[in-house]
Length: 373
Image (cartoon, rainbow, N blue to C red; front, side):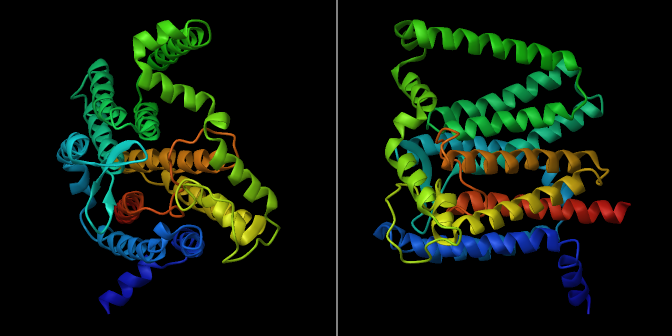
């Protein structure tokens, strides 16, 4: 009887706003992974593995709803230190894929520590913010600790290299600082400094490239140059992706149709792959699903009272919305290609695990908040 009541709580009408769009995205993802095996032989097992990631993900989601969520926040320092250790180890023991040494090869699947670092960094920044709220850290100490905590994994990920992860770490830092109650002057100083640095960088980039290369090195300059000239530097996959979208009808071409080859169809360009199968109608359905999920998290963000829980949802929402916007706009040629997957649709175990862990924590936070209320 108790088990039945718990299941009803999990699947009540409010949670339909979470589970229904998530299940629709899951179905779209399975069709995309099935289509992928007709594109290239290395994608033959993507559907089986994606189903496995989802099964494990939902199991993790249900387990995390039943534990004491406060313990996760209390152990944030250990999670953060574990993430740092993994980022160091991957530089020496990791598997290189597409020029980046960012994965551990675990035989069955590849694990990407930078994904784990997203959630551990967010939890640790929330821990620092709680110390600040309790007056255990002065404002300048809190800001300095947050910047240091973000700089360390950003530097390690920079060495892999993984530009997308660095941007996400900085975004999480901004999300926490924005809602931590620090004085506005710090944001004015930070944005003024950022503006000055960008102005200096672009001046050197356009007028003194030799000097810029001498300062930042050839490798980093090439990566920045590729981002700034992404339409030229990624011509094959971007042009083929745009051609695929342009040729898609309102209802799509269905399964087993020949497609122009795009190197990262199941991951970075999965939105294009979905459009080729389901057409623009499919794209509209996916956008509606993501919109509903965003609204679900925003609703709870403004209804949860506990500071740490609200801050976690806020940080997750920044991450979730950014990955949606960056990936979709990247697919249509408006943003540079940075290897950022589309949540729950793209192939990949590491990103999927982290998002389901976040969902489990959020659902637990919502449940605990309702009990307290």
